[in-house]
Image 1 (cartoon, rainbow, N blue to C red):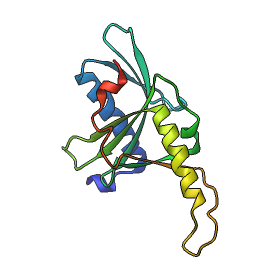
Image 2: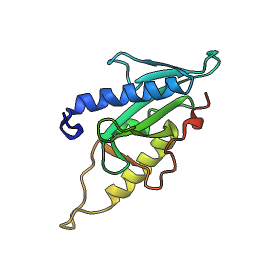
Image 3: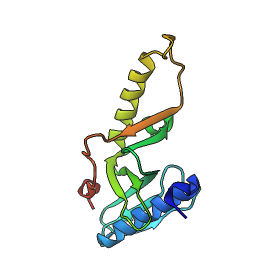
Image 4: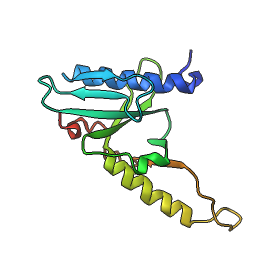
Length: 151
């Protein structure tokens, strides 16, 4: 099966397990949560459990370092909550990981959504509000930034 044909739900699940595996090989304890855990896909801690973080994983297939979120991203943040944006490649290739504090994501989504909403459609009419938000890392600032987890 080619990666491009992978169902979107499996893309998300694959991303979570890739992140958990990457945390594990870095010496951290990582536990994937149950599917009904609101906004938290993985709980990770250092080996002596003196520091832990919650992680929400967002996964995309190839393409730009760009992920779609919901409006909730603007208000769901904490000092120990992170997003790990994962970009899958071909089967057998290591994904790209972008580690971003949730507060950074919230501010980015809020600012860029306001800017988008202030613009106009192609026909010049006003844009309608949407619950969709987008996070991008065009400069690669957060790529492989595992140290930001503080574990």
